[in-house]
Image (cartoon, rainbow, N blue to C red; front, side, top):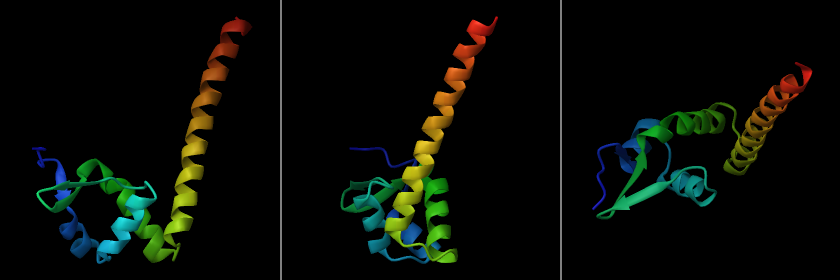
Length: 98
């Protein structure tokens, strides 16, 4: 059995953030959050809370739908990957400059 110590029950998040359970199910279907089920209770790992809060803010305050949030997060991941690649290329270039 999985240790649920670092996990938060989904029903706790639903009431805390005042969103529907279906909201989290939809996020899970799109791969934006990972839901674990233990003894018929659904959980989300506490490390996901920062991302979840960003998603909920986008959804509630900016009125972005879940598909739009998926697009935004995919673009942000691509930007991160490109920045990492740019740093590596700059470091390699410095080797040749010296």
